[in-house]
Amino acid sequence: MVEMNTYTIMVDFKRYRSMAPISQKPESLTVTSLRSLMELASLVNSSLDPAEVRRLAVEAVPRCVGADAASLLLLDGETGELYFEAASGVKGQCLKEVRLRPGEGIAGWVARKGGAVIVDDVKSDHRFAADVDRFTGYETRNMIVAPVATKEKVWGVLQVLNKLTGEFTDDDLELVQALADQVAIAIENASMYQEMRLTLLGVTTALAEALEQRDPYTGGHTRRVHEYSVLIASHLGLPQDEIDTLRLAAIMHDIGKIGVSDQVLRKPGRLNEEEFREMCRHPEAGVDIIEHLPQLTRVVPGVLYHHEQYDGNGYPHKRQAEDIPLHARIIAVADAFDAMTSDRPYRKALGFEAAFAELERCAGQQFDPQLVEIFKQAWLEGELQSPVIDE
Image (cartoon, rainbow, N blue to C red):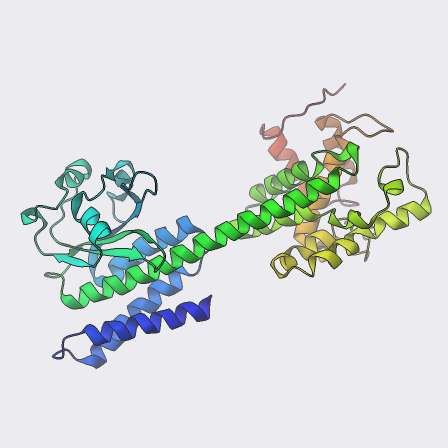
């Protein structure tokens, strides 16, 4: 993605130079525009979270152009209205409540007609939506509005407000359009990534739930383990992209059981030594499946090591303590907790209080003590509800 966007920056930059008046100094134009484009591209492509991309864009654009504020309005696909997705400045938060009807305001005109425009005096322009300023208390003097669009879609418009020194120039106009193009590409990339992530999440969940159908006593296990894992990770303060990876790993943690015989998987009693050895192979079997899917390689540590124990007595590689990947340590706690709080043919489910007492008893031996404490704290704060009443 970085290589593709760097190429796009250079294409935008070359187009920008070709439109510049002959009287301008190309050396100055090159340095200024390239620096601005690179700054924005670096920021907006540092995240694949669409909301973060939009926020970063509106914060960076005023600095690039030398303006007081900027706002990004996106098109509502159902109504055709424009809504303020992100806005910089002290009045920016107020704009969240504002929507423009199709074609309303200079923003609506640009979204409908296409092409960036400079408005030197907004009060003398009949297209200007003065109600927005009255609502926020902000005074717009001049502005540039540029469409945020790719070949496939018009996403919205980018507004840059109130030049800090004098009026906006044609150079500013072309630069804002180039910046808007970068924002559009970043939004499209982030949107595509989110769609692929949701598709992958849906496919892996369906696969894991199909596997659960082989064992009537584990219904809902996958869902609960991934929910518990995400809860622990959130309280641990992990970044969202890492939580997303953990979620996938938790969903896929038992996928290797597809290679375990029904006789072993559905056995109502405890496993004998030979059966246990067969069951112990499922983490590595899961990795054998996952490694054929490049999109899932990042979940391998969580799947492979979720049966390792903190004291080194787990399987398959007898790793211990911090040598066990964090995602695997989290899944181990969530997996064991769900096993204890779910009915089995040979025992009844424990209540949450009893299950947490068991986790604490095994902390430092089987489980990471810090993660056990974090998970228990989440329960004490009311984020888990036990279906079983402790006796």
